[in-house]
Image (cartoon, rainbow, N blue to C red):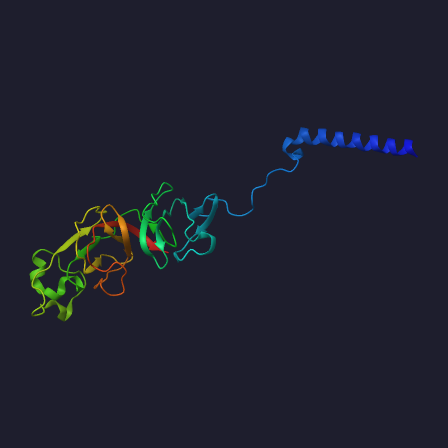
Length: 253
């Protein structure tokens, strides 16, 4: 019996060595014991879009989201993009939920996130190849300077949309108004402008990010359509706007 067990053991060993030699010949990786396996899941670049990463862990975003919650809230360390021949993605990363606080406008993997250190919101957009129309104009009187009448247009272009009865100046209000623009490119230093209204030519086709600080720093707010009164329903309000980033876009997702 002992001899039989010994023979079986030798036979098993020979079979094992034969299998090992065969697998080594076919593919050496097949015989690695306890190999390190990557977690199944997301492969960056496999699907077009914007990837937010917390260290090595990344998540795909194809639409804007406020409050990147759970493990992602305040944990984002980098951003990566996967584009196609027809679509180039961009993103605005906000440090607070509801698209508030400081923000960073990103178009590539090397984006500087220093103005949005703890990210809780992301806006996703598609960048346009050309500039549609005149861009973005900033006014220091509400309703695109209409309230101060024709005197405003000595220094500012009239608003593109019909003004109706608002074209007439309002007695006792203001008899002059300034404007800046139209801007088709970003401006790093506006020198503390009071922006009471924002007019966007071809609404939805421009992104305008207004910053409290110069050089695109401090709290910011993003506009894609005109706003006749920045004091209402806005985060940064109207005073001391020091810089603006302007980009032509196809669509905000």
